Image (tube, rainbow, N blue to C red; front, side, top):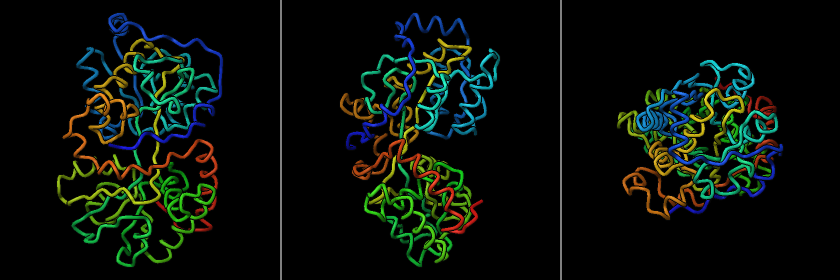
Length: 367
């Protein structure tokens, strides 16, 4: 099984504290009744092919009979927070009840008093260093950066970051975002650098820029944002992206072409996403019920079926709640054993270092 979650213990103390009364999880029947009275839930930025959200949303609707209003599936974390701000006095359909954001956005949203604290009934099984002590935000799933490879075109599948520098991968390697703006791409640079710097976080950003400068100079780097279609067509036969997106593409493409998903041997960088309830949620009880569903065994296994490691993974394994067939579709458990979870401070330091120096050091206009 996978090694225990290695989130830095500093995450919980990085959250800016505001005094608030934490809502206690209501008895299921009472909460369900209150949510049904409200009648619906408004979610935002939940594309159906991301972490199994399509099936998770349908499961919630079927189980509780609530309508789910899906706002802007392609929004980013910043857009979600802005949607709360823009709809503080709006009880209409454009106001999100809940958000699912990159980890660093949780403490920020809390500091701006945009989140309503709530502790789900499974709260004790969420690792302490992956949740806010007051219940304002809590990690829900995570994945690692890996390589999505068109195995019909790439006969020698790369196993590590250093392999991508091989001349045989000329015009083959892309990222799933622009490293000047995309968090996923920024962390890809960080991960490559962490591998080159032998896990020295203080050198990862600069080493990552130098890595991609060399990759670009050799002609191996393709300055195109890689997607399932570009992988299948051969325009970007190797794409660096979250493993759960790559695994979902493997299913979508159904062997045409064959997709290999590789977790690199070194520089294994993980990213956590977090949930929160809007302090201005028009449907606060439906929001609480949604959180109860996401953090239930059913909801957490739903994330795993979508190839995202649920935050309660170790608890589910210990209680034998995960079907062996689900685990068999994931990369080997030992591939995740060395995963590094950058702290919020490390991410905050890496972002400007990479975004502001990409043009001067690497000189590739990704678009």
